[in-house]
Length: 480
Image (cartoon, rainbow, N blue to C red; front, side, top):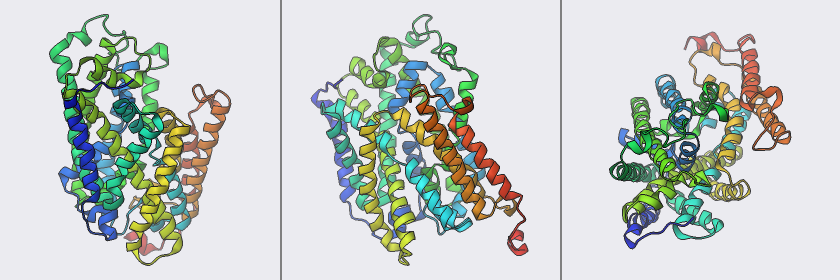
């Protein structure tokens, strides 16, 4: 499909893209602390804005989920993440920030608590998980609809505009631009929801027989394999919150541990408000366009049907902004992994101020890889599913152990490395086996278990075995 804009509709997206270019060429300090972690000085408003915008990049996937399954999208794809973010805020955020005086990445923490080989393996897993290919694809799809280009040039242009400002300004540019993206995503969807309610009323989505019977069921459609068990699976998927590198990076950059804790709690409230708007807007799309062929286009099709001139451009920009926020944030994490966790660490470079230069190399490499993956696997859901199923089993136990203060809950380095390698490889093998025996769309996994479950079990067994090994930690260290 192609968006049909009046001249006024180009005002907001045009100003937004110009703002990204201006942000890229704004002069800034060049030192590593500023480029990589914004001087560890994020205040509460910017911390909230960058976390909210970065964590909501799958906006087209939300529209697809709501259109196809109804409000179970919120139960499965929002509620579990609120719970995990709340646990992160209460039990982890303060520890992450307090232990970040010399850390820029997850791999830094792993090397500090375990050893270099565990850090390098963690860096590899993080690099793969943080691939921004899914967001590159979504940005390309939105630009294709806006300008009518083919997908390849749309992806390339979207990637360029997403990276031009962070290439020079680094993480500080990212979080500052996130503030504008935060405002755009909320105002865009608020405008769409207001138009829906004013023109069609709430009865359009609440009256009997307008929507499919399962659309307002919090547990979804039982005839499509949904239900309580389906929702429980999503709670396991949401465990990725504890290991997500963008969560940790923002905690490292918070001005104080209190900012990190309060910021996450406020972000949960913001996500809840935005989810109410996006879910309700998706239900209107289902009611007003009941025979949509491709549910991915639920929000854009709704914009074409109901949004007046001017507000249509705002709504499209509201969809594009969080996608680009996630694209940039995950690209920067991947690039930082290349620059600091591989090049700088393996070269044993004593000068930390060379890391920004290595990270810029990483930005170029990550962007090229992401574009390639986006073109080879043109499915956002498949990319998320594959990366998440392998990343969580590999990282969960060793990373949580790295932040524990009780040395009795931290295994020797060799066991941490083995649990990471065993959990990740087991999940990967099960994932590939399932695809080989049923295809990507209908995989048949060993024992009928999701790869994440099998990988987590192996990781937990090895990790626990390490805890049973006689401690090599000196008494003084344990007392500390």
